[in-house]
Image 1 (cartoon, protein in one colour):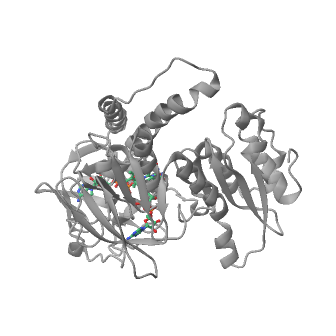
Image 2 (image 1 turned 30 degrees about the horizontal axis):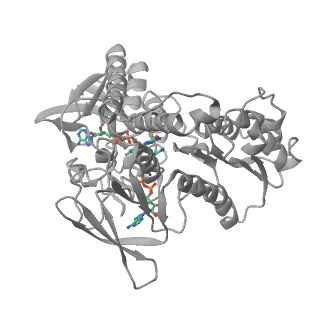
Image 3 (image 1 turned 45 degrees about the vertical axis):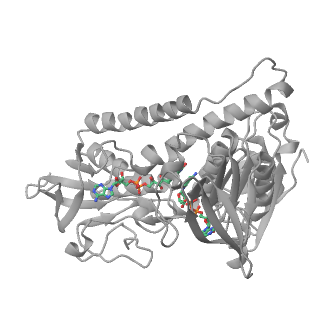
Length: 465
Ligand code: FAD
Ligand code: NAI
């Protein structure tokens, strides 16, 4: 342990990046402080992100299932009715239990957790609520914040970010969503299932940017079947707030005319920005890049020796598991060991119904990089298990190197895609070929057989197609 400083390590931010880094470093024997301005550790993910959104997705899916699918399953006599207050209470309980778990882990591993606003005062010093604290190393894990349109402020009642959209106290009659990315689609589908009329305005010409374009078309059709209305290639150029409604001016890209969309609530989900407000980066000579992120080298070192940064506040996908991997790798490094983040195999999941998941490269990326590749596909329609559980939408697509058969990307649209992608991620992490996946025995009948079949298709042909 350092004799010069109060702590070996001070972590600013107790989100998935910060709390994981703090825990691992403490498990490796370092004396660790973790600071967050929130009283409840867990950051955006546990408090107002991953966890509450998945709780509401689950509740709204069960309501929808009971209302629309039970009869076909041979279940009668169930008349489901929404109790929004109870649904929100359950969501809050799930969040409270999860953040309590982080507090427990901090205590178990002797991490000191301090609530307060941290600001840097030097390479080895920070203040927390006025008190100066010194540490041999400092990790900035301050995360991200939602972006709004120019001159439009979130009031979290009528004009909401994801935070407001996770806590509405009544179902809006008309919900307008700006952005058909992850947040817009997840939360748009929640409120649609709870009874809102949902209209999504997206600047790009397709939904779910960054995901497979072919499966993305099927994905859009599934969301339209649920009742979401899309205005693609359209830009919101103005928002006017009235006493009890909001009016959006929407302009199709490249056209003069505009149209108006009236809504009771508008969710702005057009991305997030790295958050460094109030950190006093200038005191340690750290400059952010044009996107407001903190530049770091491969070992997460900032331009100031002794200060590191991880998670949403640095470049890369803004995902909880990416932040966690960086937290783990950095903690190992700080403890004198080796840390590694498998950046080529970080999965991404949209937790709608069907789920949309991917790992590795898309076809568009491989084409633009001039990589010769093969494709193997298998639709869930041809899976016995998918038919048995009434989940035949979507399918699996495996992309491999034409010469070596190494898996370069896997894309899955369908029930449990977020779970199924783990096998593909493991395969890619260990640089498996499609033949390796196809040779592994998959339990029958499972949805995972579709990955085996698609893998077969990439170098030979699927068996059941
Ligand atoms: P954060 O989780 O943002 O944590 C940063 C912490 O730093 C915050 O608690 C903040 O209070 C604190 N902080 C900031 N500045 C200071 C300061 N000066 N002093 C003290 N404390 C400070 N990702 C997924 O992988 N899967 C999902 O399903 C998913 N769902 C999401 C749903 C929503 C609605 C949103 C908004 C995000 C979702 N994400 C999801 C993204 C995920 O939440 C983030 O990628 C993740 O939280 C980033 O972790 P982090 O540790 O970098 O930062
Ligand atoms: P996003 O980047 O996923 O999507 C934003 C969308 O808004 C894009 O499609 C973009 O083209 C569109 N857009 C931008 N400006 C626009 C405008 N003026 N008018 C119309 N459309 C416009 O961002 P989102 O959904 O806000 O999510 C932020 C981050 O949170 C993402 O990076 C994501 O990784 C993370 N997140 C992850 C989740 C998950 O892993 N399941 C769930 C929720 C969030």
